[in-house]
Length: 384
Image 1: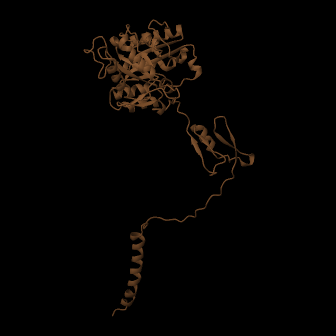
Image 2: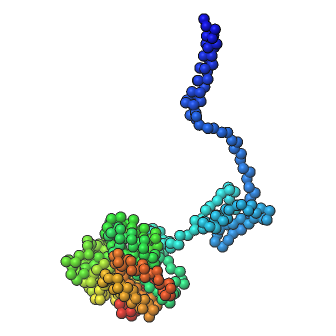
Image 3: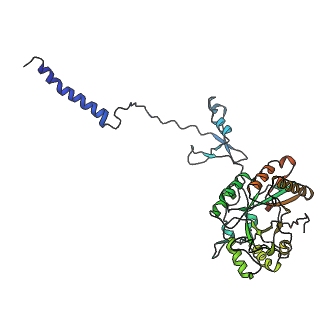
């Protein structure tokens, strides 16, 4: 037997042991081959609880004594100031380390949540608006709030933009580009109508509902299903009206969609206006028909009604719309306020949004339609 063989045989167990160790360490162990390090975990001592003082905005800032001032390298206060996020550190809580972060207001005016259960009535068509048992009215609860200083401004203008809800893209464009003070009127048709309405209200726009009414050239010019017509009986028209009113929730009132013939027939109009008044809704005449009797009929029924002074976009041209906007301003300066209607067409949205950005520098306040009413406005500018 060679002299080297016993030594080689003795080294075999040692090699097997080392190879097995390497296998376990590098292959079978879940962390095999990864660099590992051990570090002690220490619990930080609880900080001394500071005294607190309360500001007028209900934001709590710790009143630190000089010995408790944070070191110079601390940037927490700077971060709060730079980001606009206020941190509320309440005293007297069960957990001394609890914090509440208040995100700054985005500037969007918040409308009341809809539907308000006080103002709802279930029908076979769906939810209908009503006056609450406590006297609350949809025309007031769902309106966009206006600061008293703005409501009392010497020159105010309001715009009601109609035709929303039929095209989702056009509706999204109107919501995004128009100031929140512009009131939006939705037709009772179209998909995802309720979703679009809530999006508009979430962005600060108060909402009206367009009710299709018979024009003079009906049915050649058809406003759509459930149109109110002079040939229908009052109960039939009221059923059609209730179907329309059930399409959305959270609206301030209704505005006519077409309706030249229907609004010129007081016998057909009266039952509808009475129903709307009893439900606490505002009624708006969009000013498109010179033969409309909506205002005198509403006055006889003590309904809150308003008529637009002019229609901005009867002619779809930039110069024509700009000219009507100038007329709107002039009427507002003469009387203190003026109201216009328009359709949510791309050119109309563009001209109104551009014009609205320049109002403040000319001393004019843009306000929602609800803040003008209830007044009865003639297209001539006279108030009845």
